[in-house]
Length: 170
Image (cartoon, rainbow, N blue to C red; front, side, top):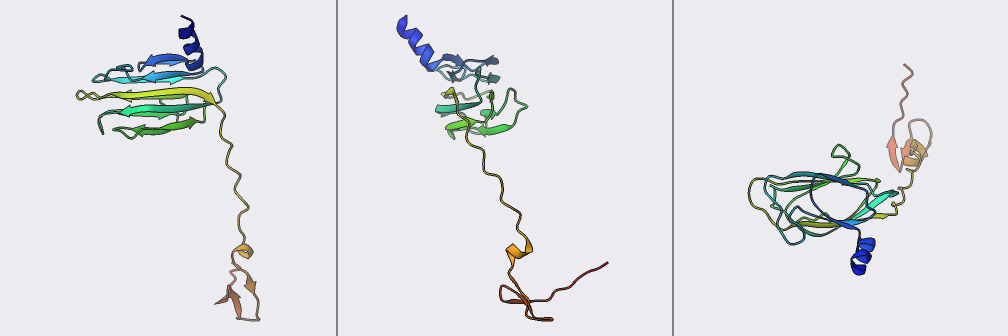
């Protein structure tokens, strides 16, 4: 009993894919067949994870094997399938390790009416959000793009190439 409680505190709850929403800080999500079975036919499940207090969520797929181009896993950055799509996965192209820049992540799984495979195993945990990208630099001006040399009337150059300057005062 003590080792079971210790495992759940360290690694969180274990779930099989279903229509569900959880707030556990960490956990493991398997396809509907669980750790040792295949997922089923004709499935359409949405599982939302919103860890209490999390700002970002780390996902790690340790197993990934779906029927290529017929069964799909969709990952959304938010609390529903209407949130921004992070990625769509099929076959053996695993999502790998991802950081979701949201306090919720939604996993949607669909399968067709035939051929079921081992599916997927995924863990989640709260994580530190990545630093935002630096702001863009200043917009270049004509002087930044070309060093003008005024050599007199009709003799201007830009980077050593002669140019003709015209003005439209209309």
